[in-house]
Image (cartoon, rainbow, N blue to C red; front, side, top):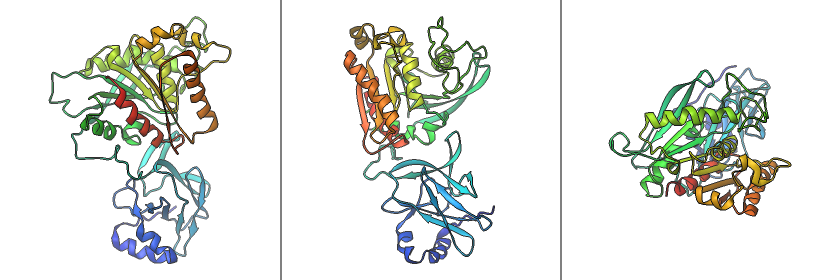
Length: 394
């Protein structure tokens, strides 16, 4: 396979000749912000169509896979091009399929998603700037490693500290634990989610309290796993698969991560100043960990993920009976927040809304948000974080 990345205005003028009647479309388009430095493709048109151009003269067939596959057209010089349908705003993973093999686009930055490194493209959302980089005081995202005696491995955690953290030495901060989804990792919120931009902007506008945000890996398996559904375990009920081993992740958070963060950072180490949320799998993890540890968390959230119903189990008996006394729960927990995209898959949307309906029927106080026009994607979750963060620690 051979690729040539065209850069610079002269290259753009040269390749425009090959677009014939589509030259105007090309001229009106702009390179995606997620392109590597100086790469002119992929490009985004004013109506959110995407233009791809890759030179691969030895390829027999090429496609762009954006969930929907688009066949690329071969030009005489071995360059392949395609223009997609309009794509919804936000961040999208994609692949180049070369003779049946999915690879990353050499013109694009790569992101860990879909359980592998993948290309990503950012399509601007018109009239919105809450996750844009602005001229406001900026916090930092720090990469830290710690050893887990539970999993017998080194773990990596990303920690956002707000602007002024290294100046205001006497100030202590509340903490939000923020989890990624299945097929992603602890880099997700920092890269795809733009968490620092969202929190920076909210703090600068006085809409959110300065906070520390902790982003850890959502996979953990004990070096001495217990059988699944062990009736004697207070955290039983989750299958012992690495990605969905919520019990061991709970142990890592409660016994290792939270004490580590409270030791290494200037936190306010009590439940009233500790929150947890996440997207998809991370949302289910957040409900699982917080509801089993209400002595440590007072703020609970889930984006495209929530609590989980169990067939044959009464709502009041879920999560070790945390809802056996609704009045006491509502007084103790300061926020229960769940969200979903209006265009989520039927099963995911139903999972979240069924749990919402169960809480409503039981009398649990909660906040529900449905992101209009978005599905299981980062725009749903950025919107949710933007809203959730404004409700915290007040």
